[in-house]
Image (cartoon, rainbow, N blue to C red; front, side, top):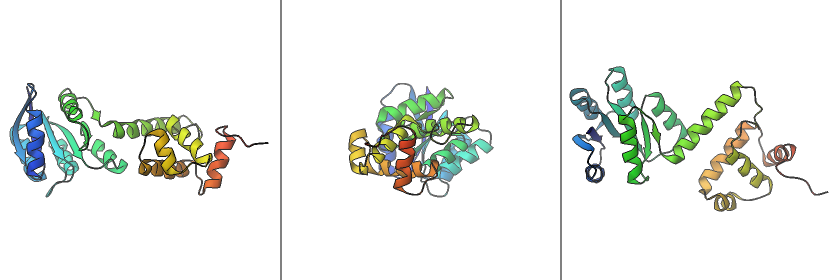
Length: 217
């Protein structure tokens, strides 16, 4: 049985998650907390297998609570719930030692998988978050191997670069690749940073140089 403490400052959210987790036979909710300090105290006293905690909590946020739990040397694993897929927050959460980062808009199956993975000492991330983490890992590995900035781009980034260079708008790229326009906008900004260019014309030059598009003769 996986002993879980559930921490969220919204009572209805806690009850909704609790009712879903209690439907499975291998999870037991042993306590609930409505702020980060209470979650920390309960974890210290009850030592659950897994603490599921919202990232945005009063008194102590989810990441701060995770850091303190790790500093105390407690064996409890931590799964973060969040409304945000912001890369900085994800990095901070992973650095604090959490075993899961689940977006609140995710389906219930993801949270259950995260709880079970954390119990086994494994890492589980929502797919949209895990893609960023994987790309980050690949980029860091590529930098250490001496690859060029273009060679460090993921296949998705190259496809977006190609579409940008062909003159597609963020909206049309989003529709083509089944992404949100905001995600495409972030990719566009990231490409300009990674390739060290400051305008569209230079992005197009990079795409031409590496054979993503060809000029008509």
